[in-house]
Amino acid sequence: YEPDTERKRYWYNKIPLRAGFSRRALPFKSNGEYVDENTISAGLSFPLKGEINRLDLGFMYQTRGSLETNNLQDSSYMMLIGFTGFDIISKAIDRTAPRDIPEAEELREW
Image (tube, rainbow, N blue to C red; front, side, top):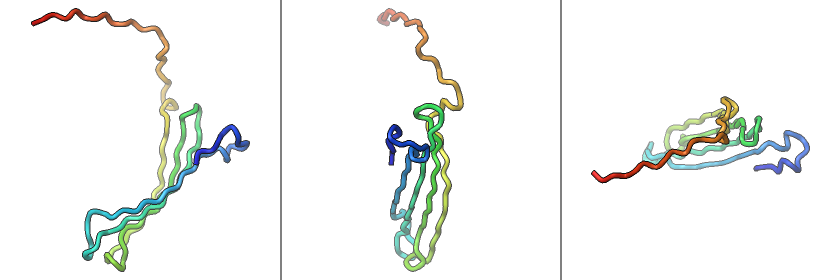
């Protein structure tokens, strides 16, 4: 969900949200059956200084296997942190300054 930032009044209504679900069969078997993996994820992005700079926070809950079919089961929780845009760390290069254009070399045969 990407909100329209111009139409929203409060900062918490301008935060982009995301959610997802994935399911896959892992490439190995246990007890003669493939092991299934299910994942539910959710996250949000906090805008930082500038248009493209964001702090991304996420959460994932994942389960693998089933005690009934595979005789094994695993579950995990994961916290995710990410940055989008790197000019918050260093100053951006000024690419508007005049530069010398190199002259073409003369090509000669061997």
